Image (cartoon, rainbow, N blue to C red; front, side, top):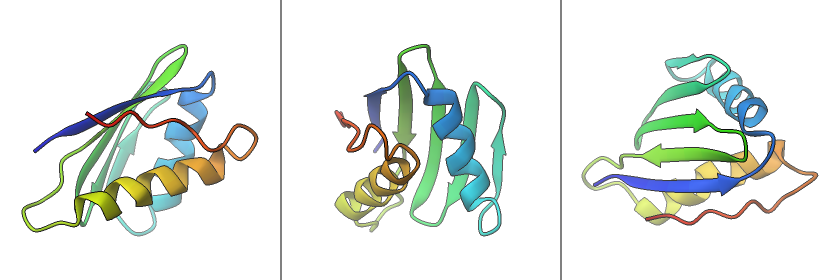
Length: 92
């Protein structure tokens, strides 16, 4: 299963890099200004920064609590986006 959300924000690149840096001390991460990936225990997280949205893709592992996974990602991004939080996640 793959879930993707296009999160409207003008600060996509900043939030992508902040989240990757935040989790880099615990998990394997790779990122630049446009793309990032995190080897999260519940499944991989991939992000792409656009001009007006951050695209977030998660791939929950079998048996993972999908709702918790979505909430953990959203809560962490909202912390970095405190000036415009809560961000809108349209998971599909």
